[in-house]
Image 1 (tube, one colour):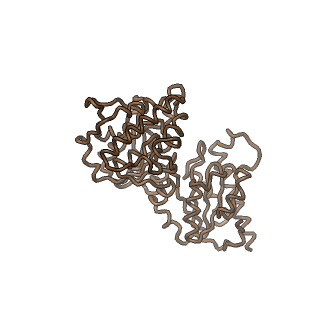
Image 2: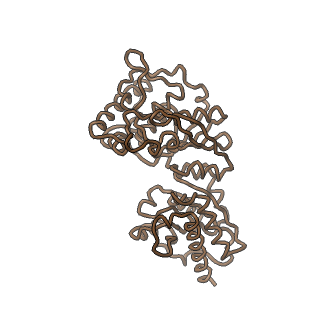
Image 3: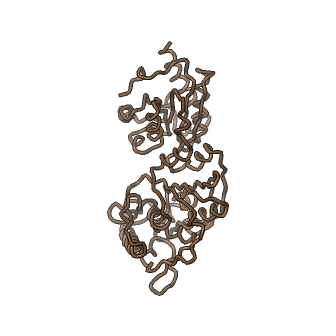
Length: 392
């Protein structure tokens, strides 16, 4: 267990780093960091406070990377999971595009009563990539969490020029159910600029494409698949994987992460030569996080809920890992804190962990942005007042 007395924290503190994930449904990553910074300034008025927006490759990734690198948010009208048109936003920073596939192909875009991975398509994600290529982007950071699809990324690939044909040479319909009919893959019309592009994909799951732990069995039910459909989808993906193996000369269906996002991970691996990385590592590398740690005396991180899942690849764990390399102590502050997680979080290496809720209140009240910001500001202020007092 960490002991705060082990750390050299005193009133001569010069630099504090704030690297929070968003408090989902309440505050953005930047808003949490700015509130924490205000609290710090009340105790150490002369301290340098550095707010670095971070994320784990899921929701908030575009905003975090764009905010940290001075990029911009752009929008495009693309094909949604059910074939209708949706407006999706993504980020551009230099020649790098930051895309969350959920913006175009995510489960929240499909009403619960219409969720059907037999027909949903990832085409919109490919259309975002195509749009970014047209804008000059050649490097891609892709978050693939929260998909509504189970089509092994064939919809995305179609938008990039790939054609999927049946035994008669006819184009196969979109959706996970039709992948089993694919017999040939025509690459003659693939966007030539893809040869100049590199793809880094945020992937925090290790599921293969098929089988009991594959895309269909593990994620299909939450996308609307019943037992029979799940089995049929798994057979369809297995058939498609055999076609790809014959084309590529290697079986990528068992690669860890191939089953992510309904097999979108497989498509990125097999056709776009992507690198799959833990989401938070992709983001921290993209924003140059380690440079921000230079001369830092202390770091704060956190997310909406600190619990036993926090050390398992979540944003605060990634921040902690990098800070420890530089000998920077880290305090975790969360919108809420699971009591059973306190010891685990301390054993993981956090100097201390704190919730921001000062008194019993309803969830709706706690999520109100002004309330949440005030709670973060006050909590950080009181933590630092205590540290300052202890070192006087």
